[in-house]
Image 1 (cartoon, rainbow, N blue to C red):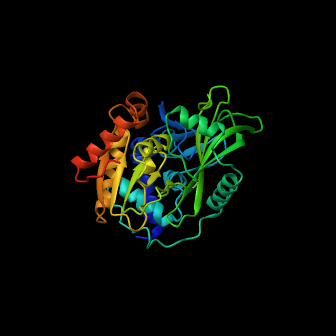
Image 2 (image 1 turned 90 degrees about the vertical axis):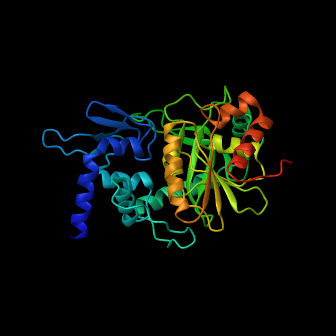
Image 3 (image 1 turned 180 degrees about the horizontal axis):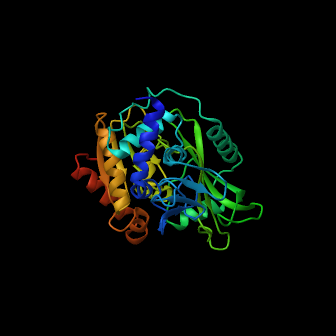
Length: 348
């Protein structure tokens, strides 16, 4: 079978499972008639990108159009954009994994070949690097106020503040982008190279997230990468979490641990650990998306000989736990969960 035929077959098989595909890779979207609507190829909330779920009047299932950018294609194209894949091979591997045709192969992070991103991804990565470079330290800024308002005290050089980040207020906003205050965070690969920049738009009147559609947005390549926070001590274990705030919440209670935030449940399941890590604690949300992401990541990591443990909040997420019960209670709860799964840590 030719490569062209193989890709066509995969595309058709994905189209047959279009709704399941959308729920897996675009959980922030929603079903509207025969379409799944989401903000853009990164999976942000919104409605400008429409994915056809069933074939109709000669139009194929799985075809999609982003009416904000004019982009369109099939589900292979969309998966490639969603993952920020470096190569088509990587995208096809993920498609086969989703279809159950083959397990996602275990490729150690230190043996993955550095391949040249395509032009579109390269431009987004360059923009992300420029944006982060233009930021300033968060202490004494609205970014620190936002995190401290959520009782988060674990910060680090991966975070910066920017007073004038470009912003569109809606997916279909015809006006030129405005500029707004934002907490920004660098996404890095296992070599420490910046591959993306997360933006958290803030409201100066409240100190919280801006009341706009999708106040949290990602620029660049996230697939396999994360926002990282180091403890300053040498460790062979790592806490990997979903959202930035929840990961930093766990880090507030456990400052002796290194952290990696994958930003979404989907990307939590795709995380590639750095060399030298032999135990990973998966700090997930207490919901179905978190459970599924944790299971997927665990399956991949354990096949590489990496020990995994689950950290699950009492409420919906760890930040709710922190604000409801306090830092000391959260620390005790996390250490007890670790001990129950075979790891004891001195509490001090």
